[in-house]
Length: 230
Length: 210
Image 1: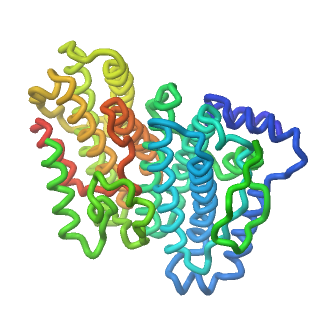
Image 2 (image 1 turned 180 degrees about the horizontal axis):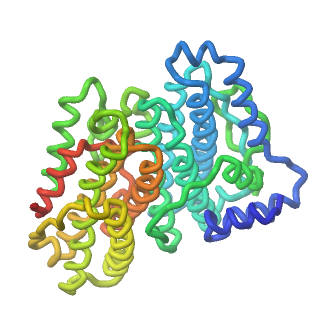
């Protein structure tokens, strides 16, 4: 997992080392992250459901990108929901987690509405204990939000449908607000550079897989009680 | 000040075809209700519907962007020069100014000889009182975000990619100053776009004229 390009990417996105730390912790386990499977699965779904996609007026490539975004939104929504339920967060951080979590769940709902039957199912997550303590939570939140900003930015110019583009840009800047908010709460500069750089799908995938936050292939249950690991 | 921008937003909502925003539905303060509000695909809107993207159209759009960046540079530099900002608020203004200067340079270089003239500014109390400064900074950064987002479909893909690198930094600034002001730093689930006209009106309301 620890290739040169991965580390360069991680340095660029994960300035505070949360994902790197999580990766180091996760690598001691035998679990294997399945985001790669999930995203490959999205591609298969697209092939299988080209007729559906045409019927919904979305190009196959837009459906593919939407499903990629949906997985990232599932990841974020589940992270905040689990942190909220853990009861470990206090003060302004608890309030921010509540607001941001509700927003990420709204993003999931919006993509499900756009994708309908073409949506990938929610994977199962294990946040490796990061939702059960305030500082690890904030560090991971910063990393996940910065990652989402870079991910949306990388995909927006590739979208074909203006309706999907409207969704992507309107959510992209909200993720940037979240990133700045979590950074302020964590005590690091909310806006580091004058230009936020995009990240490719493969780079994002490598980082997310390395966290081992996604632990099982998607299943049909809409809701799952969080399993605490700490 | 904020009410002027909100008025514009309100008009946008009233005139838009069935689109709505979470804030319009539940009001800015009712965050507790956020989770239960359905966020349908139909709420996503674009700004202006211009012609197909082209280099010539990019130039027209970048003129508005140039005005936004000129305004931000002038606003932060005048506020810092006045000296009323202290502590974290001053740190914010310094960092934002450094970013906006880089944005301005990038947009001006992209436009070259076609770059429009620098507007004139009368920020009034917004650069003298920390409280008024925070309010104006939030409005200005939100206007920048909405203005950029509103042009996403009108830009060529190459210019869109550059705009996307800038717009998220403006969004970070908006959240940062909201956090300093003790407000909810990301009040909406989706950032609603502005048309070019709405963004220009937003700048005018903040003391910008040609």
